[in-house]
Figure 1: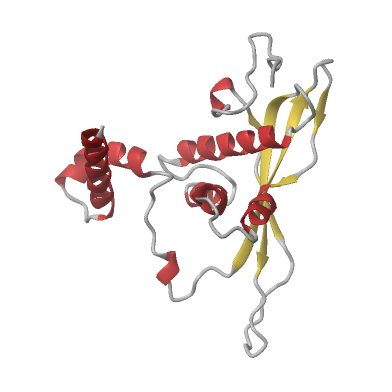
Figure 2: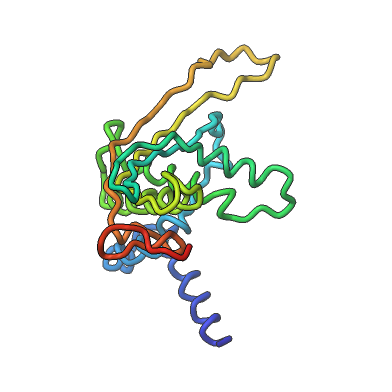
Amino acid sequence: MLALVALAACVHLGMVFLHVAPSNTVTKQHGRAIDEWIYPEFEQNWKLFAPNPLQQNIAVQVRAEVKATDGTVGTTQWYDLSAADGRAIDGNLLPSHTQQNELRRAWDFFVATHDTTNRPNGLRGDLSERYLRRIVVLRLDREGAGGPDAVVQQVQVRARTTNVPPPRWSEEQVSDKPVLRQLPWWPVAEKDRAAGTRPVDRTGTMASGR
């Protein structure tokens, strides 16, 4: 067991090294495999040390189209997932990595791989969509979206971005109006249902016993 852990650690360190290293023969031949290992959970960036760090609050929200057990279809309210993460962190001396970074990094990953019209601009676009979609499906399940035994059929994500006001002594002027970026509706397939969500049987209804 210890040998397997050591081997996995070595492989991970090697992948991270190749990811941040200058382009070379190995990265040219195995770039796709390296990217699949690194993205999105282990991406490396230097935003913390940027001369002009990000100065915005971004709230990621989601709503769903759900099908109830009686066959009726409806749309849920908007769930503020970022606010839920904030409440979980507030006052928590040891917040989890998931609470702090999972949703934020998923949104950053999506924005980095899509243009302003929400179209993928690279090979990782599809991966970022699937990653974000599975996260919000899992969060909706935790919220019990649509009520008991409701089936989530589609999800829609949006982000509400607000500038952080500059300090009183600063002469910088920024807008205080929030900016919304709303994505199209995404159908939810069975493979999008991450571990821990309510299982769906072959008839399309939630299995009992939750």
